[in-house]
Length: 182
Image (tube, rainbow, N blue to C red; front, top):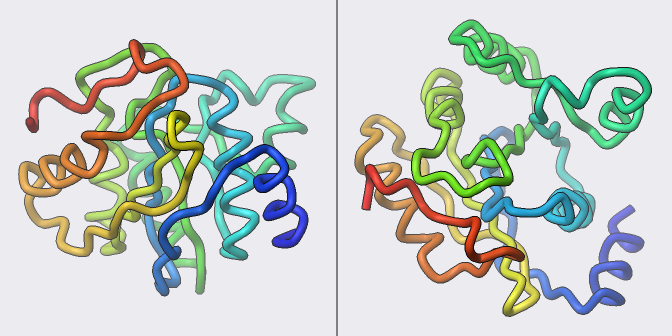
């Protein structure tokens, strides 16, 4: 799969930047997320890394017949409740190696208030947050950094905002960092 994904990304003119960190478990946030194309490019990138991962996707996508596509794509439905954070933490506890991938914005439309579930999942499971990105202007995708200390949401979110400062979305008018942490 690595060879195929690398070939497709190269064919499409995309360059991979940054090494995926040598960690067995993590929350991977990928932003900006302004187009369904982001999922395809993110999938190709993740296939290239060779890691064991699951995407978190809207539960609405898991209706017949699309649920079969999303399951094959490596997705799990997201349920918006505090118990879901515990379920994801339990998934980490029951796995030797797994990376949970999601969009911190939680939607394609512009939002200045990101969903913070990813932060609470990482904190509860005691795993790092890997900062993935996709930049359409530069045609590159990869890793901006890793946050291992997640004991302070203000510090963590401020650092994440800085990493996404100059990243260009497919639809730039639909992307903003979380204004509560600028």
